[in-house]
Image 1 (tube, helix red, strand yellow):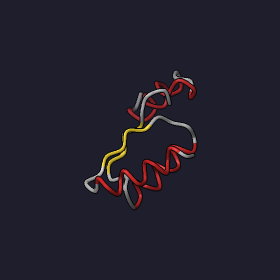
Image 2 (cartoon, helix red, strand yellow; image 1 turned 60 degrees about the vertical axis):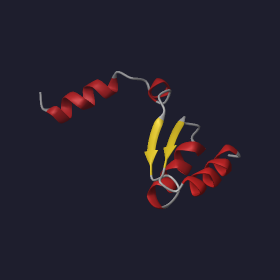
Image 3 (tube, one colour; image 1 turned 30 degrees about the horizontal axis):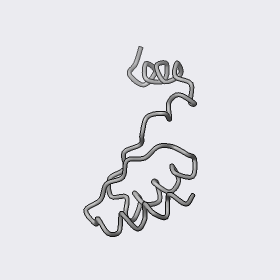
Image 4 (cartoon, one colour; image 1 turned 30 degrees about the vertical axis):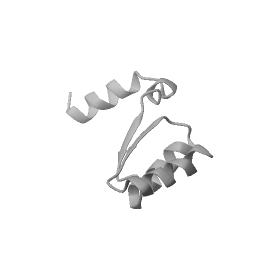
Length: 68
């Protein structure tokens, strides 16, 4: 069995409802792709752990995400 098929097989065993009980860790969440990805994950109701070097920007963005 190839690695790709093995991973597909192993992923198939976890129902998607249980897969998103683990938090999504996003680095660089205050801007760019990290910000877009964090917004998308938050809109789906997934738990997030956000990090960024820009602490003020991250705090402002995180406050906005809590309103979603």
